[in-house]
Image 1 (tube, rainbow, N blue to C red):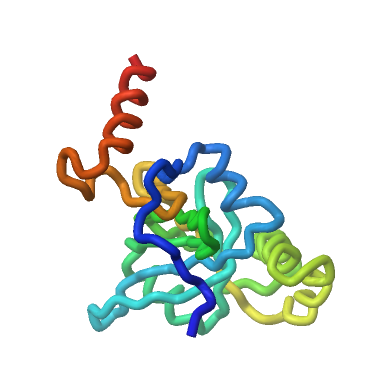
Image 2 (spheres, helix red, strand yellow):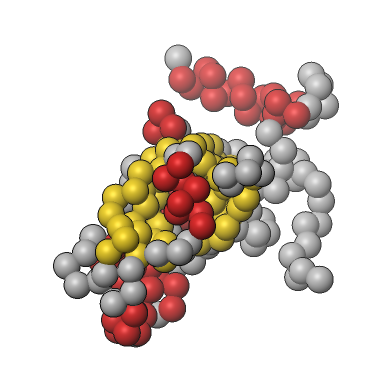
Length: 190
């Protein structure tokens, strides 16, 4: 059983909503960002599949590293349309980033020495396992890997933070506090 529990289904007066760009960068790329990227893709037989992966975010795209025999790499080479989800379950922030992406095989299969995947894998190893991660990775440099770039469709990320629901899920009058916030945002944008 999970330890995560949400006290209420929504929190009146919360600041839930989409994340500003600065918060997205902090969530996806800070040294504390050890969330897994869930990669959704379609297998050759037409069935959807999801795999959790370490990732690197460069401000425009996600990078993942796959082994030579990783089925998901071969499925993305056949059909590059995919989707990603990075989420945090810690209450009350509950941040998440979603994107439809196009996969590009940047390199591979390639061994470590002089490859493009090593700097990405080093950054991920340090972030996910600590300062000794890159040194530990060296033992597997002779193993072929792929570097895959996941580019968000039209550069769009869908984000959310907080335990509240978006205004679109309510009928008029059900959440006057959210309706008022929306009116204030619209007035400020003019």
